[in-house]
Length: 236
Image (tube, rainbow, N blue to C red; front, side, top):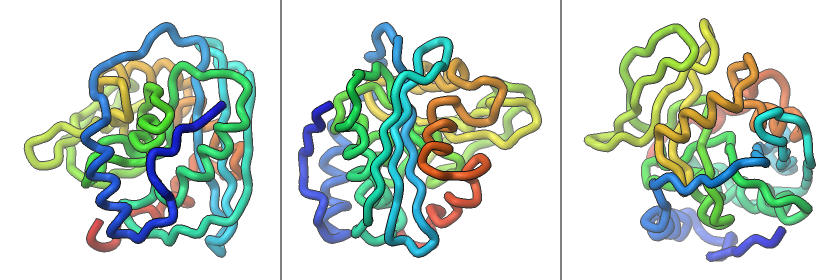
């Protein structure tokens, strides 16, 4: 599948932030999800050294969640780890794996943030925009904003607000487990995003497409430990 690259990837952090601000204004927060027969999940796993990474795209049939196709690309990543600029490090690898797909997914679930990002362009929004595809961010940790308490039962959620803006929701996908953080990626609204994530869960904390992408990329468990480095440790 072809990917339309709308900007260079070899940029400075300052240039990357400017690109994020420009692209954020082009993200659609209206639901444009049509009939869904194929759902894709994407994730990336990095070596402890930080030099090599594996990007994976897994495509599942909906609603059965059976495997249709998967694509894996492994190579060096050269953009430094900078809080808030994760997509410039990971998106090129994910898009390279996407280009190897034969099928055409209808919906994309991303292990990362959508608009729940300081400049409203996390990995899910960035990839969704470049693919012009409905996309949902399904992150394991909170990058910006805050939320109130939510119930313990599956399906309970609490809106995430950043200032006066609702940017996502903390969603309990299984009773007794930690919530995940769902946000609009592109061409979807928040109520629809929450519904699709719950529909794609199969008794686990993570939706099946991103869970299988995590495993395919070489991750272990639910990825929580591997993602801790993505927490902001300074200005983002």
